[in-house]
Length: 315
Image: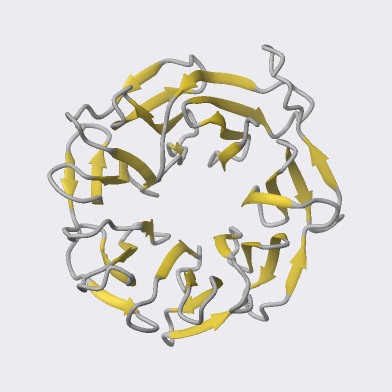
């Protein structure tokens, strides 16, 4: 089965980039949000990218995406793909190193990366103009996640500074790597993982297993309070806030659901069982299904519109 592993919407909102296929033979594709009946454009085929990261990161002007590609030696470098010309360019080239793109800085040509260059997977800042990569965390165990604040001034991340291998806490630091502080640790020996930062700067979407299962909720930076949206006994993962911060997408055992940020009231995406989802705008959610489809769900109309996923090669 040629699974769709990840998808992301361009900053302009006009295109959706996705990775489809088996990890050893991926296709980087592009969909036009204005023309869902158009065939997808294949930007790059026969890619290989193994776990843990299969992110597709857009640049600020929506002209290119960045992915990690296996160099046929089980190590990964960052590559840039021009969405108009399909030109591919190697951005990093470190010997026997895994470097993965994570998130673009909102205001400057700089990207959050995870890299094990000279150590474990830690957070690096990659300057896209100079190609220089600077290490800003230094933990003995892999850093799991990292996200920019809306203004790009801070980074929230998940790391373990203890000797307990079954532990991870949420930290915040300045975007230059200074002023690190532990922000959330529910219980020693549990994983508290940050997933997203709301556009109003107030909330962090978090997942935790401190009560046995994996539950999702929000951490309010204003009063340092934690509010859970899903039950402790279910497996859930927070996916991201709507652009206006009013809703949060969470992947649950019953599919993707939309939750109101203030009330935690759920709103299930009707008519489909989604595997993954991202926001197209404040009203629409782009989702993938088990039938290898990509569609758009409208919260206003409760209707689903599917994209044409038949490529020119007949896949």
